[in-house]
Structures are given as C-alpha cells and as structure tokens.
Length: 610
Image (tube, rainbow, N blue to C red):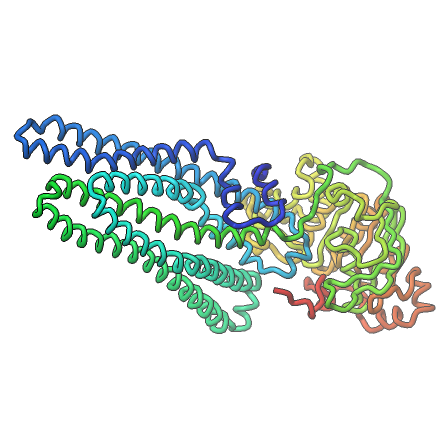
C-alpha cells in the first residue's frame, strides 16, 4: 500500500471545520493544476463570449454589402480555438480531480487500518468501505471542476451581462429579473440536494454492511437456509437506497429545469420586446440577434453554475461523511517496526486490572493480577466468559485497561510505542484467521524479512510440509478468501507458523491446538514446549494435556483470578479447577479436528454496537 500523502494526513488530524473549507483544503495541494485548468476553461469560455459579437459583425457586413469571408474565417477560428482550449482545460481538471481523490483515499486507508479495535467493534465495515469508495468518488469533480466552474461561470456570466448592457439596457433588465428569480429558487432547492445526497450515501453504506455481514458468514447463511430472509433485508436496503437516490434525482432535475425555464422564458420575452424595439427603430436587427445569441450563450454559464452548485452540495455531503472517519480514534504506531533480536523472554505483569468494553457495559475484569516471567509456559483456564481472551487483548493493547496496569518488561504497555510493543509478541488467535492471498504472504505477514531457511524451518515445525507439497504452486498458491481452500486445522497451523516466524519474546496462543487432531496436537505441543524453553509462552487452554505441562496455571472465574499454581497443586486445593477437569471443560485428549464451542469471543454478547 502506498504511504498516505502527508499533507492530506495533516488535514485529517485537524479539528473538524466547515465542510466547504475542508473541501478546499483537500483541493489546495493541487492549486497549480487547478489554476491552469481553470485558466484554460476560462479562456474557452471567453471565446464563446466573443462569438455573438463576431456574428453581429458578419450580419452587419452582409447588410452593408461588404466581403464576409474574413469575418466568417475569423469566427470559425475562434470556434475551433475555443473548442481545443476548452477540451484541454476539461482534461486538466479531470486529471486533477483524480489526484484529489487519490490523496484522500490514501489518507483514509491509513486511518482506517490504524483504527482502534474498539472503534471498529462499534462500526459497520461495509459503511466504512462505502466512505472509502463511493464518498471519495463524489469529490472528484466537485473538488476541481466544481470549484473552478463556480468562479469561471460567474465571471463569464458577469461578462455576458456587461456586453448585454452595452447592446440594450432594457432587455438586460428583463434578463436580470429572470436570473434573480432562479437564484432565489436555488437558495431553497440546493440545501435539500445536499441533505438528500448525504442520506443516499448513508443508505449505500447500510447496504454494503448487510452484504459484508452475509459474506462473513456465508456458509452459515446457506446451512441455515436463510437466503430468503437475507435477500429480503438486502432488498429492503436497496429499495431505501433507491428512494434516496430518486429524491436526489428529483431535486437535481428541479434545479436544472428551473434554470432552463428562466433562460427560455427570458428568450421569449426578449424576442417579443426586442422585436418591438426593432420595429420602432430603436434597435438594429444585428444587435437583437447578438443579444439573443448572448442569451443562448449564457445558458451554459447558468447551467454550469447550477450544476456546480448541485455538485458542491453533493461534495459537501461526502466531506461530512469522510470527516466522520477522521474523528474516529486512531492508534499511534510510534517507533518504526524493528525485528526482535534474540533476547531474554518478556516479562508480563497484570496488577489490579479492571476492564469494560464500553462505559455502559458491565466489567469483564475485576482486579485481575498475575505475573508470567522468564521462559516457561503459563496456562489461563476458566469457564467461558471468565475473561481469558481479553487478557491477551489488553497485553496487545487492542484495548486499554479501565484501571490498574498491564506491564511488559516493567513498563506499562500504554507507554510502549505500539509497533515496538507488538514486535515483541507473537499472537495466535482462537479462530486462526488467514487473509486472501498466497500461503507465503500469510506466513510472512508478521516477518516480511524472514529468510527462506527460516521459512522452511517453521513450515517443518508447524507440520505444514504436506500442505505446501499438495498446493499446486506451493508457497505461491492462493488460499482463498478467509482461507477457504484449506482446512480449519491447516489454518490454525498457518497461524502458529506465522507467530513462530516472528521469533517473539512473548508468545500468546488462544486455544491454538483446538482444531488439530491428536497427532498434530502432540507435535504442536512439542513445539510449544520447545518455544517455552527460551520464550515466555502464555496459552488459553481447555485441554488437560496442555495444562499439565504448564509451569503455572492461572484460574479465572467471572473476571477474577481465583487461584494460581501447578496442575497438582490446583487439583488438590481448588474446587473449580478440579471440577473443570472432571467436567471435561478441560478435555483429556482431542478426538477430532474440530474447535470447542466454549471459548468466548473478545466481545461479550451484550456488546452489539452499530
């Protein structure tokens, strides 16, 4: 991904401003090209302003019996030159518009990927995608041609009015009356276009969110025969988007109709009044024709003004939605990523940690305290919902503790630069997600500079050799969206290999062996214990075979540390631990390649934010 444009990045860091001013700030880095494109467009418009006057000279030459070849050639030259200049100006502005969109998209991509996990939890990813794609597209024309056309059309309109005044002040007053009426009507219509556009874009975001939800659980939807219900929800969202779009189209059509109605009415009135003036001898025929040509010429600046004002309302609606992303809380990566050098294992200490996902939700942790220092294996056990996975989220600083401290090597994780903190940690999530792309890209995500020898070693360690040999292109084979072309156990081994390839000082494994069969679980357990000889390894465990190998076991219950000790100690003195083992919540041995269903997600069911 390209680096975000620093100037645009700085704009989005600033406090919210008026949408019109923010729109100009997006366009300002390209002001030179805007100036060139605007100047070319203006010159093209000036040639159009000259054409009615040259037509008057042609008519006067015809009436006076003078040669007309010179005036006609001159008129033809002006027409051709104006067309070429106008086309060039349009190209420059369109190209600049694409550059404006590129800058904003680069910045938005950087901000979206840097969102705090808590911010993403309460948002709809489909709506965020809509802001990155559809809303930024709306900026393309309004941030360039829209701004320049407002200026150019205004100047040309004023210039045309001045020339009209020279030809006939009386007819000019009639024309100005019509233009003033249009302006008053536009003052009522244009704000409605802006509101309708913002609502239409929001409805597109809702539809994208619904589709993203379906694709995120596609097999579940099909297995539940829920296609009809999901299609009905999508259809309802599509109809709502259609209604909003029709509203925008209606107001936009009304704006265009009003402008054209004013010009056409002016033409008919000017034709009648001007014809009477010609009949009375107070105005020449050539002057009336020139005036009418000017009136037709002004249709373009007036239409352009209406179009630009409409685009401006559309663009301001997009700016408001884009700025809402700019106001979301971002992570500060801090120091640049560094490859963790071979060093002593990391030390982890939680002291009186309390945590809730949202101020309105109940506490997940109630004063959790424990230490995991030096090399060795620490197991977190407890009933579902006791807060085991949340411990990992606090160590990784996906969330910040509500109170208390989470320390790594004696330093509060909030005082670590994020990239420096996470470069020390290898993390294997419970559902072992993989990304669309090649197997190599998934393995090297956390260690892009890993050597081929390191990669081969970790593939052997994670028992991925058979997978690499089976795939048609080996490491370069795509594994599909969410890794659909490989099994759940293989996805889990990919996630483990990815974490090990980073050579972390702290390895966090959330039920990392849950989808492995007995043979592979035993092999990965050996890998885990081997890593624990040199690394601080913390696992969320349900299986007795994992727990009995741990130097220390932390028993969590309802967000509190109930007991800490070895397997033998806890069996002897802690009833809950003894019941967990006896009740098979800590399974004695894996029997199939399937994940247990009792591990909680990072968010409790009550936290369903939109």
